[in-house]
Amino acid sequence: MNITELINRYQSLGINTTIDFDKFNHISLVHHSTKIEGSTLTEIEAQVLITEGLTPKGKPIHDSLMVTDHFAALKFILNAANKKNPINNEFIQQINSLVVKNTAKTYHTPFGVIEAGNGAFRKGNVSVGISYFPNFDKVERLTSELVNAINQEMKKELSLIEKINLSFSVHFNLVSIHPFYDGNGKTSRLLMNYIQAVYNLPLSIVHNESKVEYINSLVETRELNDIGIFHNFMMLEYTNLFNAEISKFETMNNKLPPTFNLLF
Image 1 (tube, helix red, strand yellow):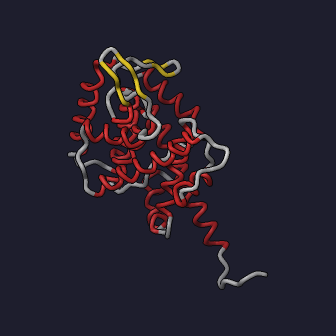
Image 2 (cartoon, one colour):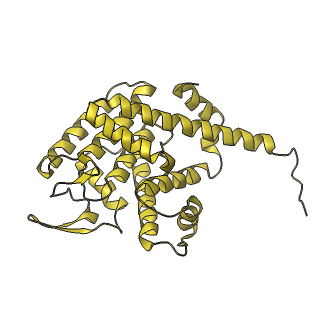
Image 3 (cartoon, one colour):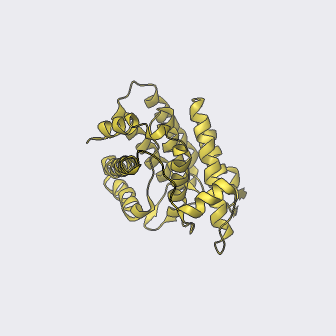
């Protein structure tokens, strides 16, 4: 099946209307996004933390805070999507401030003290691995240009594929600007999810198991200046998500007995 057929199949089965599906889908999204950034919590531990407020024993408190912050930021963007809130620099900064609220550091720069937890743009240059990001003095302008481009695209009548690829492109471009000291990856993935939610699309999850391929796709896209590389990676992740959920749903239904019998 192509992506359009998969989404139609996914929605026709009523998977997204199943009791508690959204909650556990959101927990999975938070788990994988924080796992990519170094969280040691398992998905079950993240679930218990989010639903019951119980922190896992023997795990760094920083990792639990990362999970609860991300979940709060996810709820924020979903609420904003319901209201069709406009995208601007302040909106992106607000996402970032929530996603790093309890884990952000304080940075001392020639321009003063920067509290990363306030969603402030960075005032220093950064690199991650082999990737170097734009000079800090270009961050605000580049983010504004990205915001303008997003809003222009969202005014158009887009096809399903164009809507999906727009969300992927926004993800790539924001993480490539790297406007913040902390939480750039999580913020970029949440902005992607915001656009998907505005269009009533299922939310993408970048799975931790795909971390190497994910990073390679970001690097290769920058090196070759070919957004198609990142689109292809993300579309594969998206397709795999639907296939997995459809398979689980159909397997569960096939295994349900016609009547429920208590077993002792």
